[in-house]
Length: 250
Ligand code: 13P
Image (cartoon, rainbow, N blue to C red; front, side, top):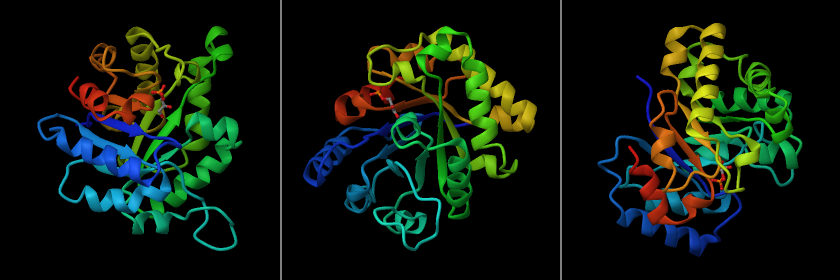
């Protein structure tokens, strides 16, 4: 049975003090009763203190990226082992901001996926189309290609460590969300693509999250859709009460 998941992608927000403050505020909220896994992805520099603060909490920790190499002369980069050593259990890969601003290609992402799995990370693998592709009706094709080229080199058993996050680029940080029907339609398509590549078990067992302007006032109807297993939340995850209110949708 696939899991419901509510994950907060903090992006490049929160210095150490702010991060600890937000984590303390999250710890005051009761996530225990919620029937979903709860994950936060603070910036690299805040991961270790976050890990220490979350020892007695159900909230899990994710990194926002990793380097595809083991170690060596890669100035400014962070290795999978470094992230493991500070308590990251998940990693976000393929976020549209990494694809668009840092030119991360499907080919590079495929390598990152391989390295991350080798180090026992669970991966939130992001896919999603830009506005012009949606308007041209090419969104199904775009996500299918992103999956084929970035993810589908892995085995059926490795798929157990994969969560897919569908995040239409036009809905990220814009206040515009996909309608619940649009989300359901493409999530169902993604599941079909998984069944075609692997099998029904993989398709039914993989959590598929929606991301893009999820807020307390729209989460419930989006998460209620059959093939939507939760959300990857940006802006609204920076406030403990709104993140909790979103998680309360389950
Ligand atoms: P917003 O929720 O701010 O639109 O961001 C979504 C996102 O990019 C999560 O990874």
